[in-house]
Length: 352
Image (tube, rainbow, N blue to C red; front, side, top):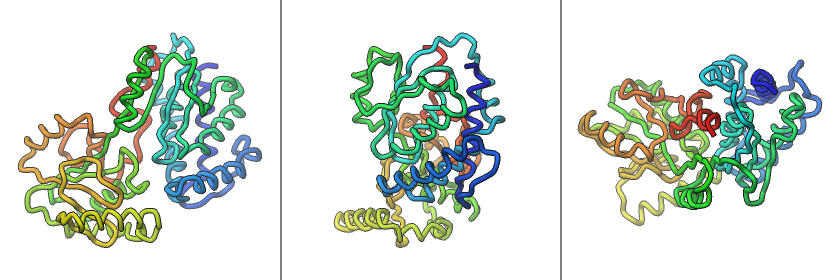
């Protein structure tokens, strides 16, 4: 199977996923193997929601819509054109996936298969229904994928390299356990936004999507703000108000109530608007329903801090503040060539 066959198969998967978006779920004509997979995938979405209360219809559909857009022939060709695939020796790559947001491990899965390797996947129990079904779809539209995709619930064995994602604690275990194999080990990271006080209402409304999408559970979600001294949060609170219905979702509301009680009992200073708490804190990882903030005195000072803490930061949302920044509202819409932790997964896979 050559690279173009693999690209074509994933583009067909993108077409299949285009039927499931945040506007509607609607069966389309001309989608390959649709009679076998459309209704079945709706059932898998239902199971995903039943097994993980954070996987609401809105969150699952947002993820599917994103991947449908990303898996266009144009995007896949542009992405792969940056590499040479002519001397790849097929190996088996193990992937240990997180389960914090729907299909969070799909990019690693895609990268392994697009480079011509076999993939051995150990999923999180929090996200185990969607990907195996999509893998079956790939095997139907491109039969040469059969035998190249394996899922396991056991300990990973018989692999040549590994990509593992987990917490800082599990990462230490991964680093020890996989010390003799080529590996990419991903730890906890969070995303930040740098505000100047000159942002438009539209920019701050877009920032609210970066904060609340997936309930803030993703590493690309903004969990911390850097603001200038004497920053007025009124405009920020006005902008994020469009997300206020989130407080009616029980899991989010329970976290809001719990964290608010902890802060009040601890007599921490905070601002809150009934569905979001804003607390001054040096940490990057904020609890659900909370966003941390920290003041900065100058751009130079902040650049130095960000540089020293770069291993804790996934994305920087800003407007003409730094290189490689992400525009407001775009953290959950990375391109195929935007790699987690700035580690080029495809380059790694082509060199092992």
